[in-house]
Amino acid sequence: MGFIVGLIVGIAIGIGLIMAFARGESRRSKHRSDLAKTIAALARMTVQDSRKLLGPQHYPSWVVFAQQQNDLELKPVGTLEVKLVEAKELPNMDILGKSDPFAVIFIRPLPDRTKTSKIIDNDLNPIWNEHFEFIVEDDTTQRLTVRIYDDEGLQAAEFIGCCQISLSTLEPGKVKDVWLKLLKDLDIQKDTKYRGQVHLELLYCPFGTDGNIVNPFDHDFSLTSLEKALKIDNITKADLREMAAKKKKEMFIRGVLSVTVISAEDLPIVDFMGKADPYVVLLMKKSEAKQKTRVLTNNLNPVWNQTFDFMVEDALHEMVIIEVWDHDTFGKDRIGRVIMTLTRVLMEGEYQECYNIDLAKSGRITLSFKWVPQHKVRDSS
Image 1 (cartoon, one colour):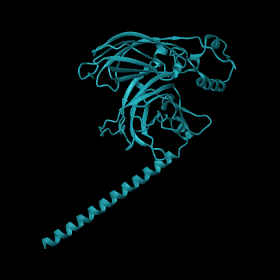
Image 2 (image 1 turned 60 degrees about the vertical axis):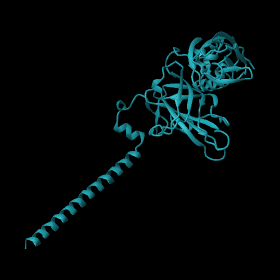
Image 3 (image 1 turned 180 degrees about the vertical axis):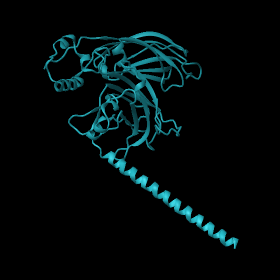
Image 4 (image 1 turned 180 degrees about the horizontal axis):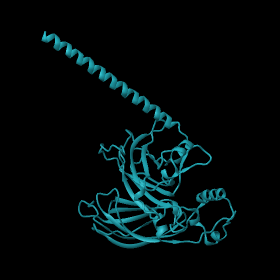
């Protein structure tokens, strides 16, 4: 008799538990359905709906409402000038030959805000020397992203690696020269494979600085004082934008660049019977003008103190390639190189810097740069 009573009680409890579970699932299902309806309703909200629900004080300062379209726009706060200089030690993605790398660069991954570099064929240490300009809407949270691909012709490009830098690390009006390591993924960094590095030169110029920050890529930078004095004040903003775009394409900054090769230190041993016999070759990439220092025999910490002058016709798009070589009686071996644009010397006029020698096992080189601008002669036709 006790067994039967216990069985009945157990069945009743089991049925009660099943019914309670069913009710709980029903409530959760209703909550999920209500949540889905709420999300769908929010997705259908217009700008007018959001402005009725939330007042202007609830939006950050960099969000503005467009007057002519039903959308939210970000208010520009400045421009970011990006020089894609080079990359080094990229992995070889091709079975035959070497990779054909190109870069895709953006702050916001929108089609009209994304820039693509030219393709460098068969090169794991490509030199691009390309300039891109981006609109900045929030310099505290936005980031610049660079993605490197290997061109595969008619097939889809093969991903090599990516890197990112926060705009908050940039000092307004100061050129930042950076090497960024390439990663497989920016969010999940579990892959430790070395994918090479990318060399960038960055210049952030915020709006509203009243001329306190000089941007050499601004069309006004290349104007003579007479041209600036003759600028017409009553032209429209559209005319100004059109003139600025045209001026950028036609803009040439001319002058004399003086490069002093001061010294190098901690160069690697490359000779079997001695240390190294180093000398330096200086090459202007666009004009192909070339100079070289004297050879210093059996020296891993050479001091040259030699100055070379180069006439530069297009300083914004020129770059200097500094190569350190080892001289041998029956040949020569390249130890490494340093590549830089002229942006910093255009802004500062003169500076001295110690650089790590790229593609070398070790070594640093100290260089001094000085820029003397020349009078600009323009074709009036």
